[in-house]
Image (cartoon, rainbow, N blue to C red; front, side, top):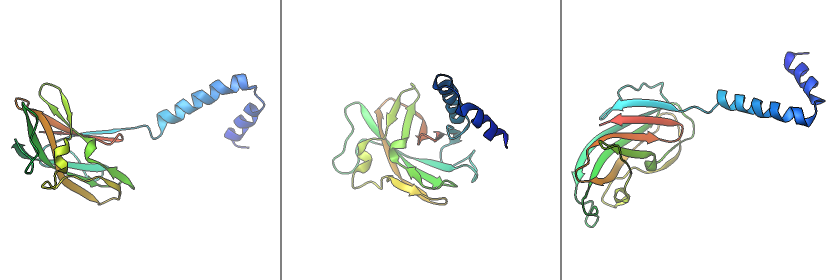
Length: 170
């Protein structure tokens, strides 16, 4: 009889009062050792430097500049400007990987973090689209736009899909 079967046989007749703490500890150990990891990567803007094809995802960010208007009607609120980037996410080796523009955030030099702005959905913008279940080799690309104070200086963009965190230094 193998060691695991022996251990299980011994604990089957154990009172519930003793077995529950052991089950809880076992669950904690299992969670700590499997599937509870996040990959963190830092790269420079304009390419996927620091990343290799063995990384699950590659992210490329290319600055497109700042603007006081997107399309014909969309303008930033008073004291703010739009900054836009061409973002590309390549799925290198993950099955059924979800890609979403809301996974991008921009950090400014004062430490504040901004989400993508709804201006990116203007019809005149080739916006970054959400894609469900990309497969290895798939590439998703488009424009992401942030609305930040006019005196703010962007320093990095984070792509965080809750499993992979890729920071691009601008």
